[in-house]
Image 1 (cartoon, rainbow, N blue to C red):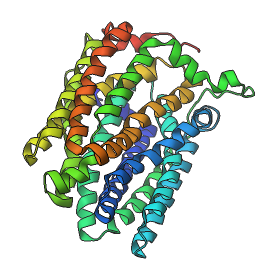
Image 2 (tube, rainbow, N blue to C red):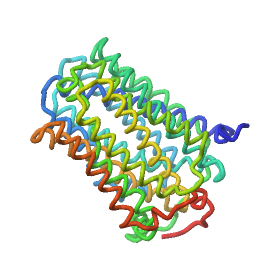
Image 3 (cartoon, rainbow, N blue to C red):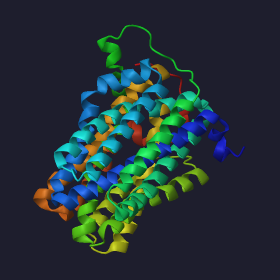
Image 4 (cartoon, rainbow, N blue to C red):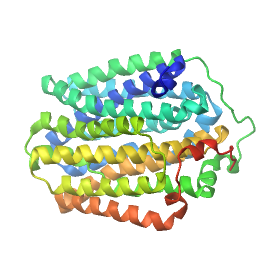
Length: 412
């Protein structure tokens, strides 16, 4: 089989990839519909911030539980149970919409449960892929996982907005069906080999993920770079505001805005697959985070729809490069028996950069306006990239990504 498709030799990986794609697609359907409907009903950008916050807080509160669940329980089982909760949450919102009870407090309560399930799903799904493909195929597997996720971020917002245009309840009903298929696929994966920790949990073992990341400065630098850059530079939460009030493109335009970063990301991952990063990976990571910030500032200042879409495509492309590099570093430098706990900590960083970043953007926009919020955040991300080059010199010295794959297993 062509080296570009080496991960697909493994049937478990094929099922895993499709299930993750469908789960991401369902999340996009729910996300775009809830955000548009919330702002359409209330016209309050602060509530868009609350949507991100309530999905992030469970990951923080449960970080000592979710990572240990991934390491001590079957990762496939944790994924499947979390997906069942996703389905239940989508069905609950569907019920409220059908009965004309779309109330912010009820929706935020359901999204809190949704965020709790995501807190368990993230570490388990990220850790499982290493158990179902050989080490030599892992970089290829990461590329396809990120590609599938980005395709979902393209199809999901566009499809969700079109379905919402037909009737507000349709994207939620579609999400329920998508989650159902994903659940079947997850539980059809044969039980993989996993180095399960058997000893009684101690405080040291529970905190093992934090300890490992703190000792491995390259890992710490990579995930903290993403945390602060996207936390300050994220603009996704404000897209309903831009679609309605800045660009005046409506819900269909919102779907295009939400899809644009995914289109750019797919282009980027195609280029990375065709022309792999062979040298100076650390500098490439830092440079593309800075470019991500600049593109964000352009989007924030733009009042022209085509320029905004182009800027968002660049945002997605530049972010994709940093995600790809960071994910390979994180997964291949981490031993299997602590990988779930490390991924739980990483989920906090990712959640802080995404959901907490959405909350920051929503709350700031309520006081300063969307344009000042997004433009200032973009330039702040550029500053974060520059600062990281000096705070984490080990990060900028990374040359070959394969070096991390060749490192012996470490223990915290």
